[in-house]
Image 1: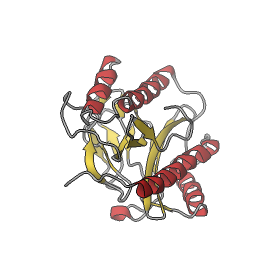
Image 2: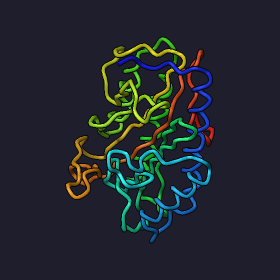
Image 3: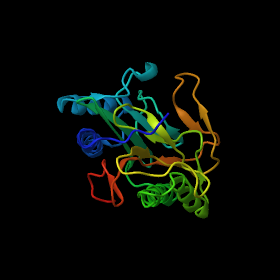
Image 4: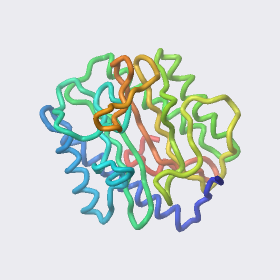
Length: 254
């Protein structure tokens, strides 16, 4: 399947949806406190998205019943909101995808509940650096897989593993499009990046082994196989004529 090059009109639509997804995560910060249940956070997320004229893409997607994924501590991704209460020291990922006027925007970030351990903070900081390093490889003429090559190089240098069972993906007109964006890959391989491509970069970095296991109870929640911490950051990225635009970067960090 070919990689879709978005038109200027489509790019603007994806930009607006991506901005809303990022603003949702920013809004959620104030509610990340000890004692709050992840199901309560899900309701807050859905209310915010719908109040801005959009719908949460995950709700009803392949039977998923919630408006976002909330992954705590050893959960790598696709955490199902439930009665779990956040505890001091937890690290939490919230992953939001919005549909606004038919366009999709996808992003996630990490939160600390109270003061994290140095062990947890180092993992989260390194994961954010991995996203930044991946973004630096986003420019016309570069090979797509150089994103994953440099992400994995940085993670391994710091003693962490890179989850290879999940990847980034094209996004914008659909929830998931071509191409797949691997976070561990061979150098100078894969499609050539071109202006108008839009995809996510979303490295999942583990403190221990790279593999995951899926909870049988809900069929979604992916955990580390050794119970060690995992962290993830994600942006929706547009390839421009001169480089990239992180469409979900409302903080102006990248």
